[in-house]
Image (cartoon, rainbow, N blue to C red):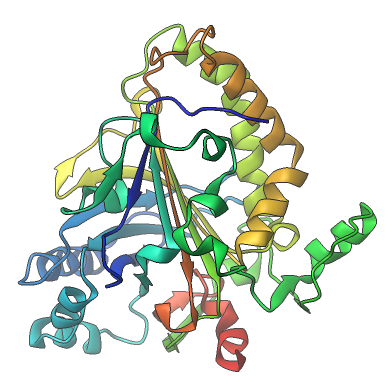
Length: 380
């Protein structure tokens, strides 16, 4: 089905093949941050301001979906962007940054996930003139919506918008065992011939021992797996007015929330390695509101590969219903069509080869990010 997102811009990260950096840094705490955790948060902000630091930083807090919520899994997360990986390397190897990172105690509850994003395997789409994500870093090339070929203007076109799609299948050698079984149960004819691996769903309640178990010391993941998929989806409701708010809350968001709950709760069926739903608190130290009526939300998701993501979107009823409802209201003669809607949406997709990803978790809760997949990554 063909569909045009309103006011869509496509961003490629740069004109050459030098990687940019998308990095997530987190500080975990139980309930609210103690004075010690506050000091760690302040220290991270301080090293971000050093020479060669990120060109743009967003600060967010984790907010879990109801089905898998746990009050023990709170965190402040920094979403940091470097236009050039050489700048990031200079920053990371500096004495001040090395001293901070190497000096963290075995129970610190601090982690980082760093992605080297090749522009040939990256896509950014933004549903408003206001830039988000990596598009806020200077020198990014842009394409106006009117200049985009009609055949690449439909929902789920991510693969065709990634420059290297014609020469690379972007397939991982792995498939989730649960997703493979679901495909078999639905009679899918073209199930990929991949190695089936068991993925982990989050604990169902905070009474689960795994939800409060801290793994002391450092878990270092020096590389990822080929074609690991990173997806960042962004929703800004801060400018919505009636009746748009009513339309979203009645017709669209119930399906969106159902889709996000499914991704989080049933990760194994969707090829999801890590899911975080977050609320924005600051951009480059400027405060942002997160009250329910005026919130900015986003999701950080790691999938086994793009194929897992695509199958998940096609096979999930709530995702299909959300798409239909969105199309109904945003078509030319719809209530929110021709630019009437003020909800701002953005998405970034990065396909990561083996050496494009690294992570470290220091004194973190079991189940944090990709920490539980170290053995899988080490064997890849």
